[in-house]
Amino acid sequence: TKIILYAMLVGDSGAGKTPAYNLLCGDHIMPLERLNNDAFQIQLKAWHSARAASRKAESPFSEPKPVRRIRMAQGGTAEAIMHKAAISLAGFGLYYDEGGRMMGSPNAYKKENNSTEFWNEVWNGQHFNDLRVDDELERFVPGTCISVMVGMQTDRVHRYLTKDAIDSGLAGRFLITCHDGMELNENTDPF
Image (cartoon, rainbow, N blue to C red):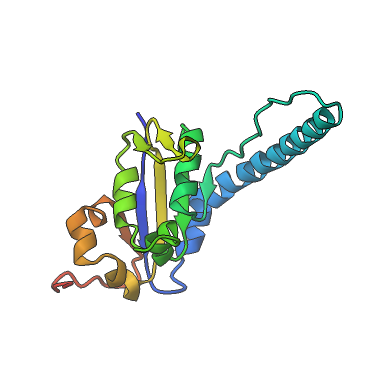
């Protein structure tokens, strides 16, 4: 069983959303990320050296280029997220300090800059099979396991959790938490 968590920390600027993330992820995962990256840099340097030596000796070189594995990232394009999901079968987390980036940055280079469909596709824990004309650009992920934590300022929630996002099921996937320094008005129609 894979654990997938979607959390949205809602609060005014300065309410303590980022320190909550740092406590949950930064203190534990970021040191591991640095170790992973250091190991990757050593592997990459060795790979480049071996490839250069092979070229110099005019001998075939078939060693695959090393791939950097991740546990936590602060965003990425849809293609990059799915690429990492394909090689990180244990899963990884994405953190967006500004929640608006989550709704726009994965599809930043596409005509329609709307990530609702993308997130609904990858947050189901099922396999993901994206076909392309170029076989090398295709992505198959046996089981997506991407957890997301989003920081969102109180006055911006309505921009992103629109009627369309709620109707699509995206908003219902989040565990939404608010800090206890504000009173939540539940007697209002958000639309």
